[in-house]
Image 1 (cartoon, helix red, strand yellow):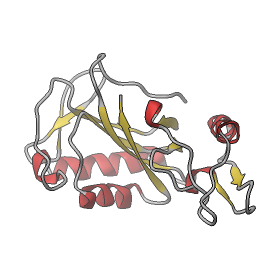
Image 2: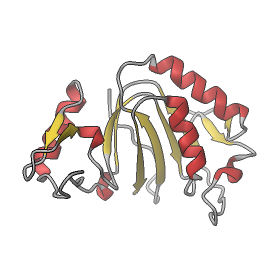
Image 3: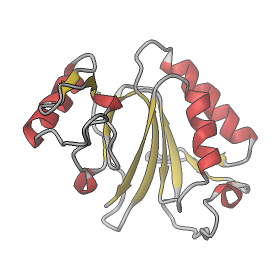
Length: 182
């Protein structure tokens, strides 16, 4: 398991949909998601070591309203079956308690992330009101997650929420959307 990095030193926009439940055949689910995106023509096969899928002819049809498609050499998609960690890098922000709105301290969340990297998803308790939830269920605008499978849209404009919801449904279970701007 590892943390995945993509990009070539330029600003990178990444949207990741990752399943955070562990009770799934991630490889089979990844194949199903891949087949679905290929069938919709959102992606096409592309030989290459970093991003095995390129934008398909229907990619621009699945952007958030008002977004424009811009072709870049490193626009692409990776569909990952191995358990990996995903986070918003420098955009990361501590989550807010779902009950009282307070934020856990940075050390608490760092410990939760490190524990999750090495094992099952931990629970985190609010220090103000004792609300408790699994780390992946804490509301956060820029969350982190550990799981599989994951679909990584690399250097794509903001995706239409319906496509993101369709990908989440195809992946199944509990999912997180991680947005990254580097």
